[in-house]
Length: 390
Image: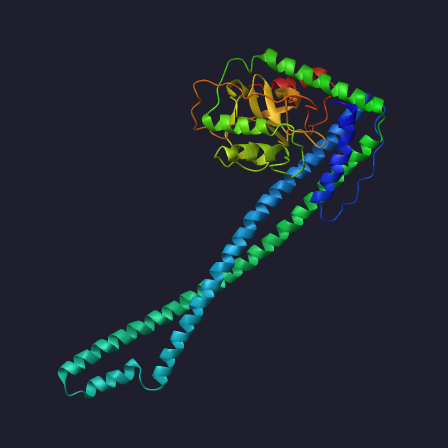
């Protein structure tokens, strides 16, 4: 990761914050960077992680708000229909009431029946009495049912509108939280010298190299596996996005965040999957790394705040973080949580050739928003990484 690329994170973070936050959030107080290099990297990674968590929360709120708005609109349409039907039922009930007041109800017809001299006329009149009674009962029933339905829909509509307003407020709060975290990243990077930035880049790359070597040595990725047709199509879509910029909350086609890329890739392949990395982790079937096939999604960090799509041969395609672009990285560039499969019912193709990569596909930072602060004991770090290999 070059110094110029790291410094570009400042600009990207501020641009993302400005684009996505309608009301500027108060920037968090800048914290003096730690004196030691490892501490600086940990602090920077922690800020990235907090920003990613807030960003994915925003994405989830956006999805939920969209669904709630659709439900509110549906209830509004149903309520309008119910009110129209209720108006018609009330009109019919009023007509029957007027007839009864004017002496034209079934009671007056019954009196006419008693006084009738013609038996057939009496029978016909009896039939009319029955029909009138049935009509009156049906009208009354429709009026009662319509009243209850309209009242229920009115209550549901008020609740849906309240839920919509609550979700909008939560979305705004998530946007402001992510904006503040991104500004904290900007402030910290701006406080670093070019030498410190270069040293951080080298330390970060060293950690990636070590983690990848440990994963390969574990044998978890041994063997050749092929994707399904859908998985291959999703993967080829992701590869075509290489070089496009990361933008918080974006899902294409010009820019992406991590889960925006994976969800759009699979949607293009004809399979809708959840929007956020947390939802993808929670809702899609999990698979062990020893069964990983191209097209599967690899999820990172304890909170499932980063996701990539597996390319094969120990590499993934992902949108790492602000200031970076969609790229190919080692699968172990971030702390592994596990893997999920969007198409567990699909059959792998008989042969697979990974899509050709454009020039510079592996250039730039590998790590996404980083996970928990590394433990003091390096052995504990290695053990934690191996625990995800199963």
